Image 1 (spheres, rainbow, N blue to C red):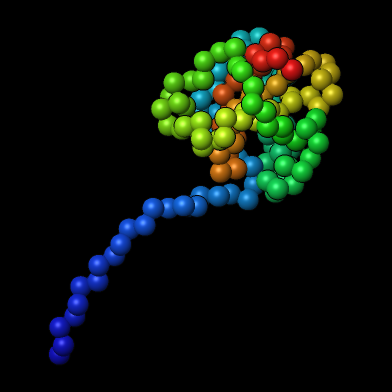
Image 2: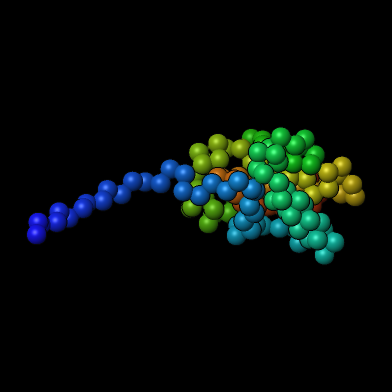
Length: 135
């Protein structure tokens, strides 16, 4: 019988541990407009279902009216502290992801604003009248 050598494992940092193929939504940090009605909440859920049913690459290739747009914008509210403690702006290249609640802005000009990190849309704001940033 020989002596078995102990294997030493070297831990490597994960570079791409979780990269879903579909867009996922995270509502942990959302600050929403108190004026959001049940109808608009239902529309938001419909939009989330719609975008999460297709491959992320497909969503990225959609027109901004029905997909996402990425912009460096100045938000008129502070980014939630818990979000800033967890992520750095370099994680999302200082660009916010914007999803229109209604593709043609009818009946209202509402936007869902957040950031996308590793195909996860972290919703930060629900802007019911387009007043959080300059269009």
